[in-house]
Image 1: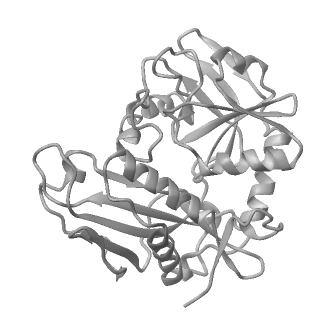
Image 2: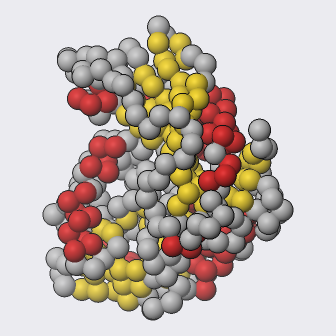
Length: 339
């Protein structure tokens, strides 16, 4: 992998050597298995195919200047997967199995971890699917948990450069009291049409409003929204927003930097008063926003062509912790030793 152009690999699937698997059968989880296959042999009536019984996570491993490999906030991803399991009636995956499988997948694919300072990282995708056959609408009795990895660049091709968001009221990402707070595939399927339209118009993503009243900011397609004004970090509070681990981390870092933090309903009109606006998530970390265009009322909100000072400070601080360049005072990283 020495000659790979790490700075231009983009965000997409590529094959690594091994993945890790664990079956749930007869009411219990089995041992971890290592596979070199990219394929799954699955029953035609598996519940993941018919009734959407599946959930997934996304986290990253980083190579430090000190040569140590760090996985960022692994346990929080394990907890969030447990929440998704509860939300769609899958057996709750034990945190220990999640952590062990992620660690093993990273160890078995060490040569795919991008070098320190190149801007890329090792993306880790844990996936849990219902494999047991059911043709009535009910939970499966068998499940498969897997972890596979691949090197990736920034989610948005622009990297840490401001992009544009589009508000379109005719689309919803998730229903109130629905599955929006769980990391399940159906939420992403629901966003594909709106996302395609946004990209066609030159926007990086859709900024969704709440599905009930269309009055409040919800989420930026694949990422959480935040705004900054008056030394305050503001992010929407809603039951249909996925609880982003990156956003959770930025909230803590904002407090560490002496900022106020508000997690509350954010009226769409408040876009006018923000000094900086951003989208945040595992894949993008922070994507600064230079413009939000509200297509329904033909109004745009502008935030400058460069990332704002507080967004930059938060981004650099978070990345420095992930890379091991700053002390990990909150114990967010798990160091993975080579096999």
